[in-house]
Length: 308
Image (cartoon, rainbow, N blue to C red; front, top):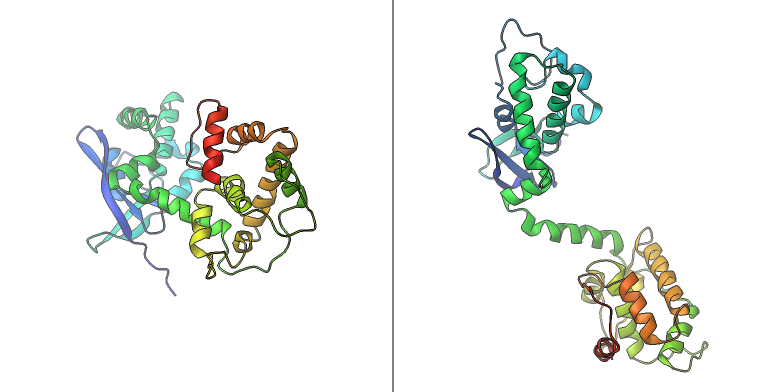
């Protein structure tokens, strides 16, 4: 069975020019960023067909890289990038391109060849073209450039978040096993000035809100929101199972245990809730928040009221 041809989800033109040449690019449905084949040829002033009789060439290589004097500089990364990718454009036609990451690799090759005095007179303009590109690429990576040109950056973060959620959250509910150690609750109760009864399973309602604040909001981006969305509740609004029962065995649970150990260590090192909260905000801040200044007691009290 033949492999499915990838499709472009976004297309655009890079805001880079070599002379009057613009670079057509696309993002495919498998996330690969593409520079069109024609754009690569134009960028380096080469043609897809025809070679001068006096030029010595490597067979089965594109004309922007088939000169024999360049062969010593072609490494494995560049060879992998030379695999052409056929895809379906937004208009439905078939097109061919290269992984966008080949562009800085080509620039490096030509600049290195010039530095090593490997280029002949007719190849020197290729090094000039590479230098112009490198100066632009030094300001922002090629991946970001393609994303900006195609508008893909608008959904890039959403896709990245979805990948994180897939790694952390399991599709099926896991059996309940004791996950939060007594040491975590013992130190939490001590810092909150509550009486701790290790044999009792009843805890203040606010413990759940504090656990969300200290653990799930700091475990990974979007985790708490996703867990709340997929966890059913009873008629009284209580969750029917624990959030950790939906974490994956290979990533979610190990990361949770690692995070619990770090939080518990900060608790044990603190004599008051205020001291602890300053430490955790500095060492393990919530995702999506920025605290540039030291927390004052009044700010901690405000956060405390939000929890309760």
